[in-house]
Length: 448
Ligand SMILES: Cc1cc2nc3c(=O)[nH]c(=O)nc-3n(C[C@H](O)[C@H](O)[C@H](O)COP(=O)(O)OP(=O)(O)OC[C@H]3O[C@@H](n4cnc5c(N)ncnc54)[C@H](O)[C@@H]3O)c2cc1C
Ligand SMILES: NC(=O)c1ccc[n+]([C@@H]2O[C@H](COP(=O)([O-])OP(=O)(O)OC[C@H]3O[C@@H](n4cnc5c(N)ncnc54)[C@H](O)[C@@H]3O)[C@@H](O)[C@H]2O)c1
Image (cartoon, rainbow, N blue to C red; front, side):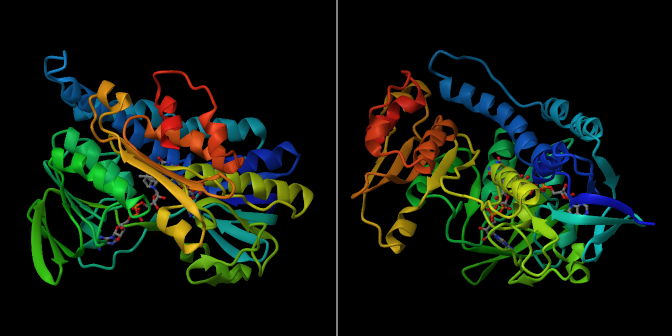
């Protein structure tokens, strides 16, 4: 007979952990399933390991910026040891997660879950029945549908490299290409980015991205935009990447080719049809409560839901909403106002709220304060000329509509703008706040 649960969660990442813990705390019988080690993308293959490597790359960058300013001597990355530093965080994650689930009385299953009916699924030959099922299965690298696709490694492979090849090609020009290129270049690799779009980091403000590109150039990262990768060929131990740029064919030789061409949920492997869960244009059809419109027993949260931006804090927020709705009936809707996003280049670039073109498209009346602030004290004291901002303030209400930052502290200061947007603070509220000096936040008053 199938084992019975109140909630079975497919996936064991951020969304799964948050939802499972909350529902279990109310006494429900809960299970989580993952075919990978417990922990999810962020902790094992994304945000956290990436940031451990960025720590090494940042140290190199800081030394290089301060060279000639009182810092002497060389610093370089020992990739093997930097990887060991990364593993000091990632290796214990699955065991710690397993322990947390066990301590709370949540069952864990290892294997790929497939839905078998409206309230049932199977994992590794074992049948489970559940009153509710939460899809928290995240996203996977998209199929590029190019010959030689099998030669590319993805984020998981890159973040586990035991040695760093000399010539690296990144396919795509979004978050992953930006971050991985900054790590690899500072560790001594020759990096080429092949980006189909006409610029990198299309989710960020175009002016600020242009300022950041100076850093890519200084690092010797070869960024080729309007360049679409069409095939990857294996030649001996190496690769030849075939691309087209403005109709012209080009080839680039590499020791490693990395997939940075986008991620989307793998809905197919879930066998949604068996559970009567409908999709539209590659997305689950969900109501405002993150519940399937065709099967009320099924909810979704995080990257797989594709309701908010595919970021860790959004997965966590979705999961809290779903847990509330499961425990007390549908009453909470996700609220994605003021979700900040950072690409952890060195220096970082950040955004929250609306881009300039989005605010214009909405017909909003707003003023823009923007400056490349290379001469400001924040830039000077960190010897980092890439520093600038663009802030949009609504004319009638004085609300902050959007904030865009690049340079030192952008990854932290953006959170203050997020606070302002989410809680509808005015520009004057921010301006009149007394921030510690000299910190990144103490520049905010001059950005409004
Ligand atoms: C390289 C990289 C860097 C990133 N950096 C950041 C960052 O700095 N900040 C940020 O906010 N976000 C970042 N992200 C995004 C962030 O990692 C994700 O938004 C977040 O982890 C999604 O969490 P989730 O719980 O929705 O899914 P996941 O954490 O992806 O968990 C889903 C789990 O489901 C499992 N699964 C899938 N299908 C099945 C199945 N059929 N059966 C069983 N298990 C299944 C998968 O193995 C996976 O472990 C990054 C992503 C990547 C790839
Ligand atoms: N710091 C962060 O928050 C962070 C970091 C990494 C990843 N992520 C998450 O992971 C997701 C995936 O990141 P990503 O960088 O892979 O995707 P992305 O969507 O940011 O960028 C992918 C880019 O690849 C290009 N591309 C696709 N196919 C191509 C081809 N054949 N040739 C050339 N270019 C091609 C696309 O035009 C696009 O600009 C992001 O949406 C983000 O939410 C977040």
